[in-house]
Length: 344
Ligand code: 5GP
Image 1 (tube, rainbow, N blue to C red):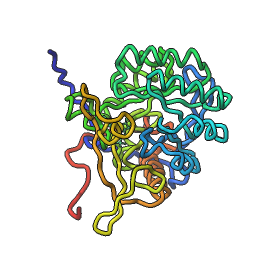
Image 2: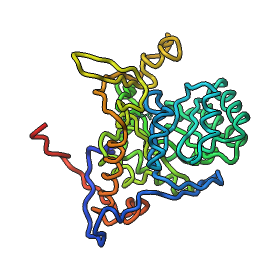
Image 3: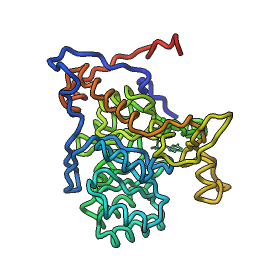
């Protein structure tokens, strides 16, 4: 047994210190980014915020709505192959949608089928497992990279620099970072495993950037300020579940209780999801996600505008003319209190 005494931080533990700046308006800030990738020859230009590949947030409707703002959606993996073929064939801006897959043989065969039939119309792929530390996962990333040298591969999840490097060397372009911070995740409760998300982002970004790789901060953002902190900490991309859940474009059943309308939102390792897709929770495992009811939030547009406005404003506060400059202009201060909640 070993104890590490260095303090690791979550979004709630810090604020971004404002800096003197020559910017006069947040409208001067450019929050798009251009990326070259470590392996894929594809060039990216967009706003690097991506809806999570949960069946509640990674929907076709969400992809269409977010694409209008230059954002991306990692589609969930439960549509049938025909639906993906049709969708990706007609997708004009390829960076606005990721095809997601796990590492099972079924996932692999379905992906190959979609690629063949769509004439390689998928440019962005998200290889997603709860625990990115297994040899089988690394081997799968290698296999996809060898078979499809041109696709942009996002792969995760991990929370440490060593594994970030290993995945990049195996063929990933973007490593997805986060174990346990998600809004409907119960991994930390069920297993005691996890890592404070802001520190995970800072450490993995450092490792990735040293190799020319990218990272995506996945999970734990609850307000636009958290997204700004993730970018400030070095994230190239930020993935959102809960912040996009409950909108019209999100999946999940609509429930009416006492005249109020709610949408169900659940983790992909929750009992809900396993009942739906795996015929229940297998005897050898426990659910690591929960289900919640969120008051219906209407169209996602207002939320997206709030997010983009918040990130743009954060850039203005530290004098970052472009999102790219946010990290180098960020100084985090550790705090004991985030907000004044006297009025709730
Ligand atoms: P959020 O933005 O809601 O805080 O976090 C979204 C992320 O939570 C997802 O992208 C995914 O990485 C993670 N997640 C989704 N479902 C589950 C689950 O059932 N269990 C765990 N441990 N994590 C989940």
